[in-house]
Image (cartoon, rainbow, N blue to C red):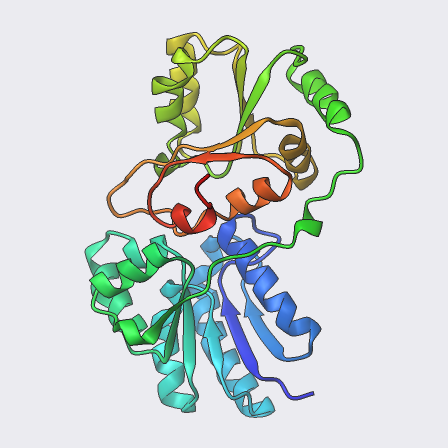
Length: 301
């Protein structure tokens, strides 16, 4: 079967994160049909310096060897490579844009990346908010299409009852949960996720029966822990750190409400919020900030 597209990604499993999951699932669907080849960085981003020239040379080799008619880049940072590949190979090059890969504030980044994205043949935006950010930076709107993220619900299985899930979670956090209402947030702990804001502004006003589970790691972990101490919330808010996929699934099935308390941060944005789909697929109602790409991940009401 003829290979129809060469994918290039710097974000791929076993590294963890939204971009990694996006790239993996997108490419897997094409690979299973025999339509695709990939060049993927499966190690941490400190390896990016050698990966970029390697990927460029490898892309030229694979495209010419297999007569691959198109190249797709899985995020905007790769767009300068895309411009070069388009010039050397003469094939259409497209790119997926997620959010931060187009809004990152550094002046040199903003001078280079939007210009390069605008020289490619197609721009796939994961939300309407991401498309708006592209157009704000001079990328022609006729190049852009919105294809929202999706998930496979079968990827979040749990072979036990909700009661058993809550019992297992209660044992993990060492408090009884029979009469508790469990709020849950899952994701990288960065400022835009709004977890610190939620702890400071919302949790103190909720009844004592509300507990809050936070799964994830990141630069905000320390400041969040400090806010817990300041507000005396250690018995109601649980910083679980980075968790396995299995434990994340258990959290989805044991909780009552999924919370996405995102806040506006200049130069950063939530391009979509795929975790909202994951929570929803487990039957969790999602309460989220009405901003940015989250609007495309949730149907209000």
